[in-house]
Amino acid sequence: ANHELHGFLELSPAAEKQQGGDGDHAAGPSKFSHPPVRVAIHKMTYWSYDRSPTNRGIWVGTDHSWYKLKQPCTQLRSSATQQQIRMEDVHLEFRAQFGLVSNIIDLLQEKFGSTVNNYLVVHAKRTPQNIHALLSPTPEQLRKYPMLNTEPFDLECLRRYPSFVLTHLNRIHSALNEDCVFMQGLKDLEKELKAAKKRKDDWVVEMTKDHLLRVALESEKRSG
Image (cartoon, rainbow, N blue to C red):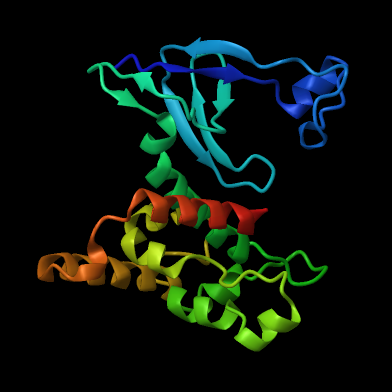
C-alpha cells in the first residue's frame, strides 16, 4: 500500500550543524535554525525501531531517506473515511508500548560503574517481576531521594503487552536468548495474559486513553 505521512519536517541536529546552526534544539531556536517545513512523505517502504541511546525511536524510510517520527499531530483531521481523528489518539497505545520497551532497554544497558560491561548479563538471569521489585525504591528511599523514579518500568503495562516487548528485545544480545530467565518470564506473562482473557478477568480490559497517556508520559520521563 502507498502509505502517506503528513506533518512538519525539522532538520536533525547533525544536519543543522552542517548548515551553520548550533544543532541544540533543546535550548530553543537559534538565529541559524531552520523553521519546520510542512511535508507529505509518499511510498514508505521501511519502518524500524532504533534501540540505541542517541537515535532511539520509530523511524520510517523511503527509497531515498529516513525520517524519525516525533510528536503526533494534536489537531483534528479528516481520515480516508471522513472521520475526524487526531493522530495523537491513534498512536497513543503505540507510544505507551514503545515507552515501555525503551525503559526496559535502559535498565538492561545500564553500565557497571565505569566498566564496559552492563547489567544485561545480570538481568538475563532474573524475571521481569523480580527486576521490578529489586529496582523499585521503598517509600523511605523516595522520601530521602524524591528525584528517583517510583518504578523502573510500568509492570501493569508489561502484563498487557509481553509479546510486544519480546519482539523488540529479540536478538538484542546473545545473553538475552530465548532460554534465559528474563525471556522465559516474558513468555510466562504471555500465557498469563491469554488465560486471563479466556477467564475474562477485570484487569485485561483495554486501557483508557487517560491511562495510556499517563503510561506514555511517565515512561518518556524515565528515559529522560
